[in-house]
Amino acid sequence: MGDNNNNNNSNYPFSNPEGEAGVQIVPKLDTPKMYKVILLNDDYTPMDFVVLVLRRFFAKSEEQATQVMLDVHKKGAGVAGVYSLEIAEMKVMQVNQFAQLNQYPLKSTLEEEA
Image (cartoon, rainbow, N blue to C red; front, side):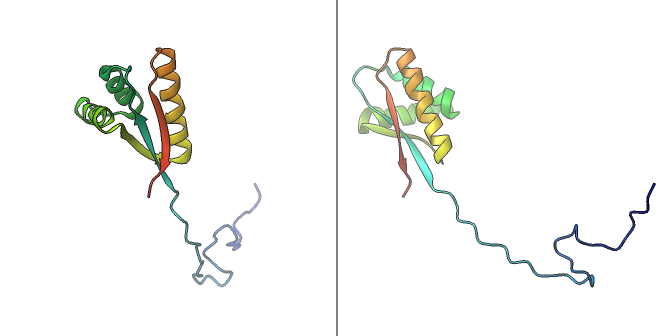
């Protein structure tokens, strides 16, 4: 075996060759924009199907799902969850496909959180 015990600290980004601690400037990262997934009311989708969607795709408890479903029913729309863009887009696609497969007109959309 070769002797790999040299004093090269190049594998340690916070050290300089003299062994003193260096200062590294880390750029400030912006927090990603968040998006609300919104379920839209219609006159045909049963309330229990909306609750099922909220429990299955948004991990809501029975009580939470019922509250969001009532918002959808009474206010015309309800926020199912808030996610990064990619996750929100996936949730919208899943909900819309699941509703279509079950022959309900339930729609979801996303909106940038203020």
